[in-house]
Image (cartoon, rainbow over the protein chains, first blue to last red):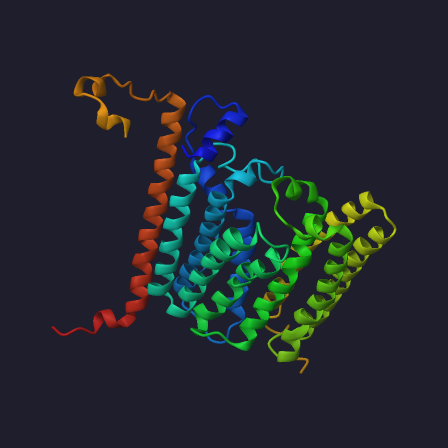
Length: 316
Length: 62
């Protein structure tokens, strides 16, 4: 057992070594995050010009899913010390003592290598390179470097979560293009308001473990302001696919409506703060956080909806 | 390593860890899950190989 696991086992009162089940190892892959990653990857593949054999497409998606999951496992290995002390993460397999930090490292590293090599051998090298960059960025740049050092951690680190549609696109085309960069930009711009909304009502958790999230370092007022600014910037970015011609009227109308709701929720968070009502502000921040997940899912779903024959109506 | 400094007899005196029935059951379930995952991956790699080869598999010198 690693030091972290021993400490955790002591803290939880576990008096014997526990055996990690398949379910525990699966939990290391952060399945909920993985599902969103896979979904955005699918959209990248569907929107991309050209086609891919279904078996190769499935292999590409599996590599994206496993690579994303491996990043999660490596993150849980590195962050085991702070995960044990945060309410949101205390139930993860490593802090619970069900899987040792060493096992999480071995599991994550093995899956990382397998996913990148398989993507390179069976799909193409561009997609494999992007997958490798994603895993490396999430582990080295976000988890190890930025997360505990700067309040800009999730702004820059958010790039890791933004790569999957670009990887999906590259799996089909073998290249990176402006359209796939726009798909990347949508998730990149969505990440800060999404995570800062969470950090607003979980501020105490981050403060307790010394992670310099924006509300901890700059205060809640500044965070609410930044959420509003990023939300205002996010909406035009989500409409860029219409301007570039790879999304049509259905996507445009849907995204504009969703963007209006997103902005309204961000505005509500801001106004609750300006009235000094911290409790209400936290409630609204939680609402924004939950909606933001739904929002990203729907925006990418709209790309798929437009692929149904007869629904694509070009605007430009 | 502490083991390196032990004489042969002491090494054999070390009590092996006791695996409870529950632990053995969990370990077996984990091994089964891994076997299924590996088998699935193997089948997928075989399918991908066929797809990559395509009709070329029939185009070979006799």
